[in-house]
Image: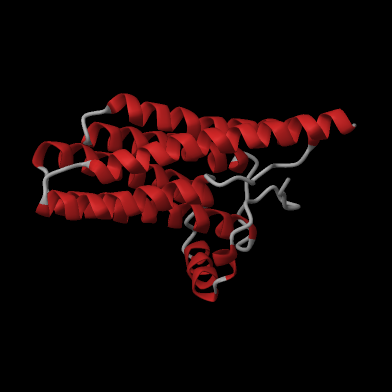
Length: 211
């Protein structure tokens, strides 16, 4: 079970000097962590729209835009914590805005990808699997005081898969008109996130049984 003293996901890039300077600059401009968290949902929504329109237009550029917006969503997710902690701008409602936008963003991106390939049910299934990984992590925090970030398909892994799938989807759209990359990406997220949720649940049950 992986946890940090502040309940934050261990991310190596958080130690980047460039990101820390960017976070300090935002803090100096009075941009709050909650505003950045809300911006992450906007980026996810733009990724969703890019996916949806790519399904209608089969335009490679829209797949590329979807991938860019996914990465901007992740960047916002990273910087909001830096501004809150390192910038000393944390608030009492920060925990809500740290969690809720992630659930919305995951759903928008995964469902949008499903719509892009005309298989919305697969996008919904991937979104449910992603929600379950977060649910078990938060449940672990509630029951034993430790957040479990373990597993092969945590948030950063899901978004890496979907970014790669979107970029491959752009190649497919330009050369073959097929949509196998996004279908494969969503399938990997669905199975991987489901396994991750199960793994975390088993870890939690073992921890509860030992105490």
